[in-house]
Structures are given as structure tokens and as C-alpha cells.
Amino acid sequence: MTTRTTPPSAAPDTSSVRTSGPGLRLPDAEGRLRTYQPRREPATFTTTGADAAPLVSRTVFSAAHVVADPYADSSPGAPAVVDWDTTLAFRRHLWSHGLGVAEAMDTAQRGMGLDWAGAAELIRRSAAEARSTGGRIACGVGTDQLAPGAHSLEEVRAAYEEQLALVEETGSQAILMASRALAAAAEGPEDYLAVYAHLLRQAAEPVVLHWLGPMFDPALDGYWGSTDLDAATETFLQVISEHPDKVDGIKVSLLDARREVELRRRLPQGVRCYTGDDFNYPELIAGDERGFSHALLGIFDPLGPVAAEAVRVLDTGDVKGFRELLDPTVELSRHLFRAPTRFYKTGVVFLAWLAGHQDHFAMVGGLQSARSLPHLARAYELADGLGLFPDPTVAEARMKSLLGVYGVDQ
Image (cartoon, rainbow, N blue to C red; front, side):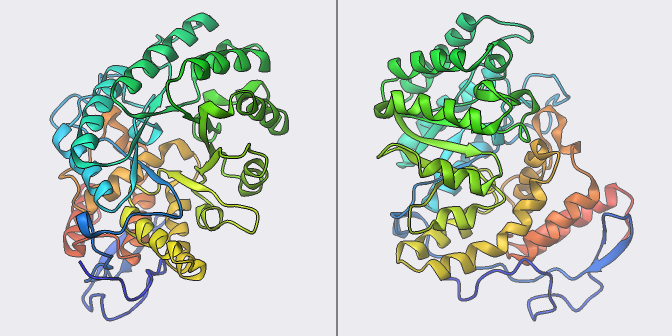
């Protein structure tokens, strides 16, 4: 593949790469139909695979989605049935661009269609694939094997321990995810301090701590023992300060750039901040005179190639070039992650289908129905404007087929 010569543009335009024909009739947020002219050429990216330069200035993980078996029962509450070949092929796609894979995270529908049995198998298979390809991988550790209902702190801790043992057995780095069960069981900050201290003491290698805000999962409201984010931050920092040798970094998913910057400036030496802010990632990764964030982002699932290229530009010290590549992607990201934010996975899988990474738009738990047609149409328009589809004609045909299902004639 060749090097990009111009940065992508999120805004629809009338450049020569677009059709001069009738275009696609897309519904807008008010229910009106408008005509959009798809582009004819994708954006191009630097060489991938063995010839790709490694990313050096930032550690970058993409949280990756899972591909459902479209012929299985994927109704809400049914056990997840995964298309393993296509799911693993997508991870190889991310690794080929030099990105790490954050596995079995919320982007993979943990707690929203993917149960612990499916997540455990996903971790085993992806870790084996990472070993065979030399890809970097970190895997989510949670408590989602616990049945719905109340649980004691001891039960929560044991569930965490079971998942941590599995992840470490695969040779993967562990990401201690926020736990719905712990949020329900904890009576205050001291319970969080006790549970995390126990887990960090027994972790074989430094882990990533994950603070997922309630916009991603309402059951996590008040995590770290308080709905006051300032108070919660103090508890979070206390966990880290008491065990800095066991914390590789923190992933912050609060969609609050100011708070993330303030938090990362208070981290102990050697503890990294991995931004999980899908609204403000370019400025947080670029950083300032006092530091920067690494990245662990769900939006880098559809943005993998452009994200990797932007970081390679940043590796040369060219902050302006980095921002020119990544800033135009923010409109798409903010659209996919708009409230209710937890349904962003639908847009991520939708774009993977349009991009040709899978042959269908079906999701575990039936989550493909979680976003409206106007929302998906806008996601298509923005992604096409960025040149994210390797074959724009395939994306256009698939978009047209979806529009037909909804009764939008072309």
C-alpha cells in the first residue's frame, strides 16, 4: 500500500473522487431524505505487515469488537455464538498496522451480549493468535461470571481472581475492569481499596486499571465509592500510590479531557495514562509540555489504519501532522459515542461490515438494532468522507441494501 498524500476530511464534499450520478438517498435525524454522493477512492496508508515501522512514541491499543455467527440465535439473553475465524482475522488486521489489541473489553460487548464463557474463549484464542503473530495483547479481567443479584465482597474478589488467573495463564497483560458487582457490593471507598489491594498484590505482572464512567455503563455510577468525581479520584489515586510497582497504567473513560489531564499529572513516576476518551483523544495523545496520554480506545477499531499512521507521524515529532490526520476523525467518533454511549458498539460493527471485515451486520445479543437508521446513515457518510472503506463501492452497495430493508428506495 502507498503513503497517504492528503489527510482525510470528515466533511462531505464534491471532490473528483465522488460520483456524478444520483448518489444515495439517506435519512437525516429529522426523517427527511437527502442525497449523498459517495466517494470512489479510499484513503491510502503506509505499508503494513512486516515492513511497517513500529509505533514508538505512544503505546496504542485498539479495543476490538467480536463478530457474531449470523446463523445462530443472537437474541438478547442468549449465549453468545462467535464467528471465530472472522473475529481473529480482524485482530490480525489491527496487529498488521502496529496496534495492540485490548481484548474482551466493553467494545467486545462484555456485559452486553458476550458472557464470561464467550469472553474466556475469546481471550484464549486471541492470546494464542497474538503469540503466533507477535502482536501485543491485553485482556479484560472482570466479575461477569457472577449471576445477577447481590454478592459479597469475598465473592466479587474470587470472581476477579478466577479471571485474572486465566488471563495470566495465556501470557496476556491484565486489565482490571470496573465491576458492576463490586459497585453494588461496596459500601464505601475502603471496600474498593481492600479489593484492589488484594488483586494487585497477587498479580504476577503490572496491570492496567480501568475507570469506566457511567455513560458507558450506568451500573458503574459511584465507582470508587462516591458519585463525587473529585472524591472518587482520590480513592483511585490511593490504590495506585499504594501499589505503583503493580500498575503499568490506568485507562480513563470519563469523556472529560480536563479531568484526565489533571489525573495523569498526579500519577506516580512510571505509571502511564491510557486515554479512553473517545471525544478528545487527539489532544490527549498529543499531550502538552507536562506529559501525554497513551491510548486504549474503542474508536480505534474502525480507525485502526489512520490511527496508526497518525502515531507514526507523531513519532517523528510532527505534532501538527499528527493532528491533521486525527482531528478530522473526531466528528465520527463523537457521533458513534453519542448518548446512550454504551450503544457505540453498534456503530463500530456496522462500519466493520461496510469496510468488508465481515460479511453481515449481526451482533451478539441482537445489538444491531440498538441504533436508528438515521444514526447509521450519518456514520456511513462520515466514515466515507474520511476514506475509511477499503472498497467504497462495496460500502455503498451494503449501505444501499440496508436502506432497502428499511424501505428507502434508491
